[in-house]
Length: 61
Image (cartoon, rainbow, N blue to C red):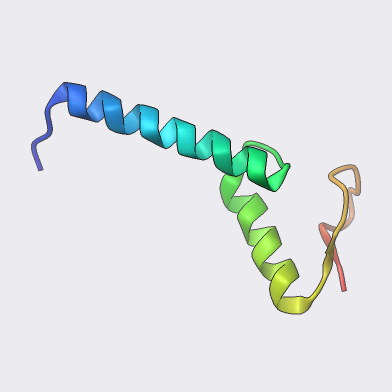
């Protein structure tokens, strides 16, 4: 797939805006995939997400 450099830059900016929005919405770290996975598992198992300072676990059922 050939893409114009300016289009590539535009896509990169859109990606970064979306990434920041995800992080802000999840009140988490810059690890969007990990944060989303925790939220997904918490929802599925009706678990509570623990604070980031908890070193031994991310969720409590």
